[in-house]
Picture 1 (cartoon, rainbow, N blue to C red):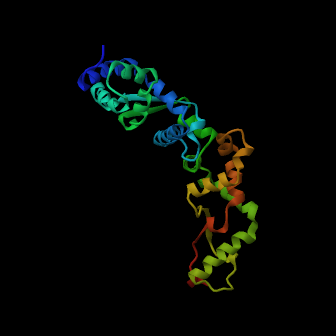
Picture 2 (picture 1 turned 90 degrees about the vertical axis):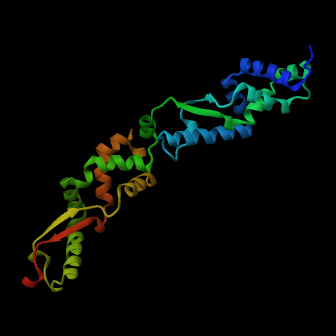
Picture 3 (picture 1 turned 60 degrees about the vertical axis):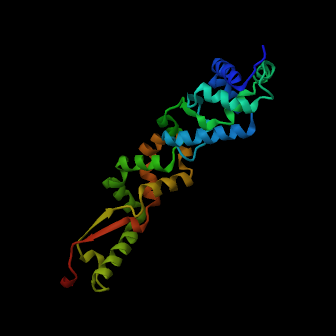
Length: 250
């Protein structure tokens, strides 16, 4: 039987579209098209960022499944839209529309009418352990206690030697108004290690130096290599001096 008017065509299309609708078929169709595949990659990356995965790591490398979780249009609205994809509105045209799977073009031309969801098979923690970003490393640096550890300061003293520390003390003595010929040994002072840069900056240096490649995991580096890395890279600006003597006493 031939469809006699547009309303009849819409009614037939409505039922057939609902019957054949398969979200996975839409995803497969997108993956087979270069431009739409790029759209999916962007979607995957944005979804990964929203879920807390490393921003700089290609999310497509994480095992995942893209799904359509919701269709925002009624089947009547989809049927109305599909009229523009038909050569005519008789039975033959409708059959051709479904036989040639033109409905997939209809769906992918209207992707804003779907809610997509990306199900990542690896947890954020698992991915960050293998591919940490600066932000994640910074949280581990802060909680490590290495930057407040007295042993870290002691190793810096041993690494740098007395001349390194005397230079720092003398600079502060001059700033406080001590006579320039006042010997360092003559005053009372405490030495503290207080990094001059934040944890994110330390993390960025760690990534730039590729130091993590020398360890089996990020946690192994934090537990076994971080203190040594800090000691090696601490500068004079990271040493804080608390002078307890007064310039008037000299």
